[in-house]
Length: 94
Image (cartoon, rainbow, N blue to C red; front, side, top):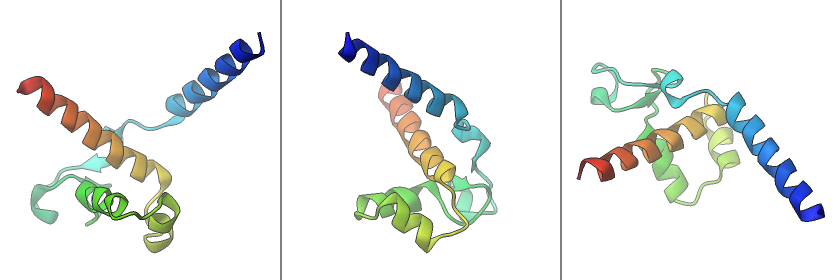
């Protein structure tokens, strides 16, 4: 019974978090005049690929936010969501 309650609480917390997040399309912009049309964060010169590279190099979310105070947690999540969605679309197309 306690396990079921814990699972219900965890699912509700996940739902609350997901429902409060912005969809990545509200954050990721693609403009031919900014970084050669690469997907970027809110029109800034920071691209999705920059963020993925920082995570891949071992930086933590907090380290990225400290180094780039113009970014938010939603920006980082949007970059990850965009990359995951793009990967999913590539797999479906092939």
